[in-house]
Length: 234
View (cartoon, rainbow, N blue to C red):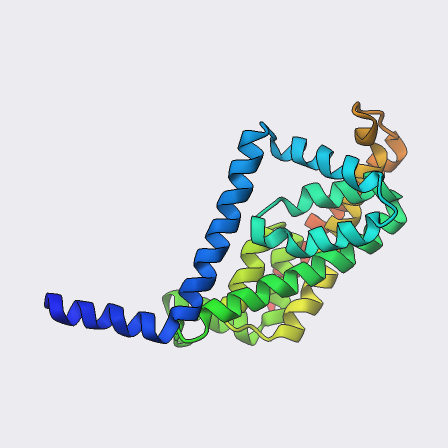
């Protein structure tokens, strides 16, 4: 490819996808700002979690703030698990699960739409029987089962969201599998948060709640193995 033709390709790409380039630039700026702020404040992910818990515990709008943060969380790649733990600390096991289910699934939908936006016009993977195309075919034809297993085995939450949107997986199958597949983990993390004394600054475990959290976590892994085994046999 000559230099002139290479420049034409680049120019054509920018003309066709300038919105994506601009959106990616703004996203990168926001993410960089977040990293600079946390580094400047010497905040680890756990330290950031404590700051958020302290802030939300002092506000009467705590639940709405929490849900809003969970929706925006994928943009900053903040840990979904840590926020789920925070829900148990702030709101207890019952409401913690409710608020997390609402926020996490709205956030997953946002990440799915972002992935779809960036993938539109960029990805044209054919559903072949070999290589990546075979995986795309599986993900599109068995969307619910594949995403459901991904959730149960705790694959990176945001990676699954963005990938599903990027590959144009059926949204209804994606969100239903997300709601059901992520629920055991959501309950487990919220119960873990409810069992601790993180809001007071030092751990004070309620062993009954903690054991329930661990039991549900293990149960979700067992379910994922059963689902995968059934899928292989079918």
